[in-house]
Length: 477
Image (cartoon, rainbow, N blue to C red; front, side):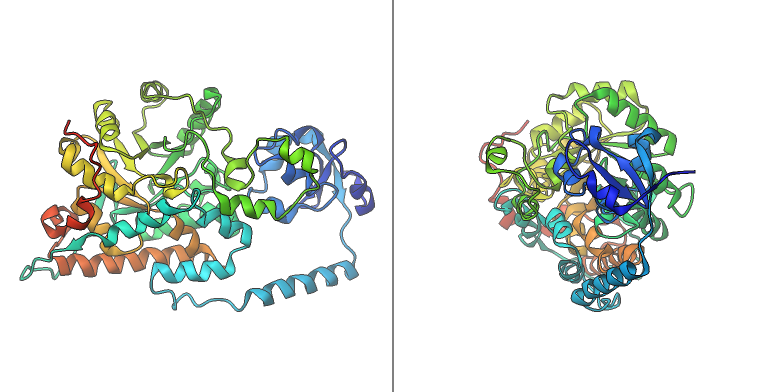
């Protein structure tokens, strides 16, 4: 029988020298794990001697703690709270819920902008800062979306558009729509079901989910949340400094049944996301000024959860991946036509034009501009063996049409996926978000005169306003 740990005893182990914390009533000794924690030592030290269940659940699945620490780190079971303590806690939680306002109306969500506005109210400050933050002054973050407003549609009329088919094929997998949910991380910060809610929603709507390396739910649990065993899931990879760890991860996701590997290359180092860092700085953990200036480590969730990324990889990583796996390989984070052409020459299965949602390097050009650049200077890669995807800034069905008309196979939906889960919506919110885009896409394909995605082409666009932004340094290959 497990020994019982009194709250007073737990509180005595609240230092770097002896750090215990409770998760789901089990007390763990994490003293030896403090400096190894991927999220940074401060996150553990801030919860020493306490019940850390709430903080833990924001990021991790229940079984991860034992898998990481092992059974020898277990110290016992925390004594249950008394009735008086429960009343006090319930009263506090009631105030928190009251302050957040009443449950929002899902039917009132009629655009992706509505979900973002709702999420700004109902997400925690930490989660909001992590999701919306861009690098530095967030210029790229804003321009990703604005770029779509610089292209106008040239509708064709008197075409039979009684029936609209929005379906497509992504890496050999059927999709009811030409978009997928991008690899967003730490979904549990927004809803308790995290990435599992996304898996359920996309399965019911017939599209594809790309799962992040730093998901808050294990890949096995995400796969179990699918609506059928045939539902395709792709997995995004950050190459680890220790490539053996990446091999282990790849083998694990292969066993789970993922259908492709998407290697992210636009963040060899973590961008300076100031909103995220300010939120972390507002929760001091007792550091002295000497400790602050003596450390060169960045703060914030982004920096602490992706500090393992390998900045030493080059194009040889493609051959390495081919040696490791037989799954299709997609390079995510192409930002110029020269690198798109190199990816084509390396015969990868797909590329994602992306600047990491404006989260890595500020003033990096919008992905839509990169797509226009490819049309102008490297058109030979469009329609060939390599599919082209666009990720970043898509908020409307017309945005999707513009990307597809310029040669993209499909687009990724990132932040709006997390926004739609907020306010307690979870899977229902994601489904509603997908349905909104589906309706907008169907309406505007009919308006522009395209019965299916294959009939969308550049003649339906006026790109003049965006063309003047093409780099003067571009040269035809």
